[in-house]
Image 1 (cartoon, rainbow, N blue to C red):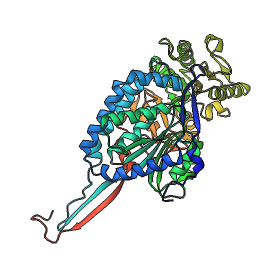
Image 2 (image 1 turned 90 degrees about the vertical axis):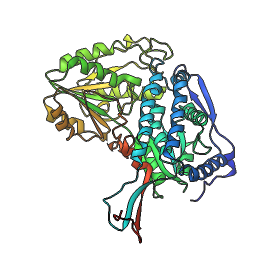
Image 3 (image 1 turned 180 degrees about the vertical axis):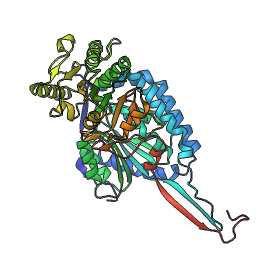
Image 4 (image 1 turned 180 degrees about the horizontal axis):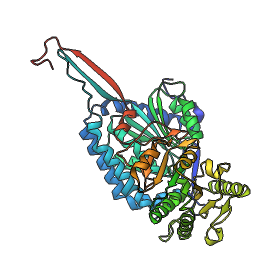
Length: 481
């Protein structure tokens, strides 16, 4: 399809509302883009890319750095917006900008010149040969609500740095995040059309993907969403980067630092109310440490403060919506019906309420892989803990999953961690840390956790195409270079 096909009925804009998990109020109301607006955005992106790809990397870097500065200067307001939209406690939301967003954006800006440099094979007399990394064109970025800035920055900044134009569509729960990007790039002086955002329905997204002016799709979301993206792109020869679900495991070996492991795994399981693609959802503990680990884990979990995320004392906010909390509660009930034991009394958290997004954290033991809580993504503040006899059993259980995003090992033995890591089916293997993305390392998944790669120098490969130059020199310079 050469152009976005829309009918006159699409000019009648549909309105959508953001229901805040904080209090159930309508926080934001926006309109979906009309067909005409989508066509105009695609045309503008295509036109802008022709001149943008001719700009120097230094010029692109200067503008992107200014955009980052905008975010830093407005961190307070952005954080409050984010807490209202998706419920993360205000004591934590600023760090999505001031730490993770800034770190990833600046790293990808800093490495761009080297990552995008021509590849030159060994010199051959009478020829000049090199591979140039050409921008793809227009990149469609589909970003989720749970970490709306951290997930989108992985692609938005490097796509623009590589000479592409970007269309950003955020989840309807966090539309203000897309608008903040637009304000940042406008303040930075980015040429018109290089970055744009659109509020779109699922049906509109599918139609945009089918348009010949979209050269690449980067999606972060559910496995079901990934299948829909792949289906929409199936009639075209374009790549879709898919960061999908996770059921990320941790393995605590007998030589682990117990106190350190407990502290970090509690945080890894419950930060952001467990709504993290790479959050810890299942833990395997060597039987020698199991009882002590569980005791310490439960005691630390009880110290969370569940409540209004706009209050500074709150450390655990509501889940994004009531249906998400209900899904997790059903997982817990199913596990208990099969013999699991809950270790956290919900009454310990006065804000916990059935029929609301306010859900107390839960720790399960006596669990096994017949239970959904140990096999299917929870995306909630719930974690199951199992004892294991040895490394072999831990590896088997960690691999017994259709997901493979990250896995963490807790041990004093680095070589053992590497040996175990080589046997785990996962995109990232951690030792003594979890739930963190290092921008210098490739972010990728296996199995139903998706495909493709963002961050690191490798992240630029998905946003460019190689173009070879094989030039015969009829009058070669002295030395034949």
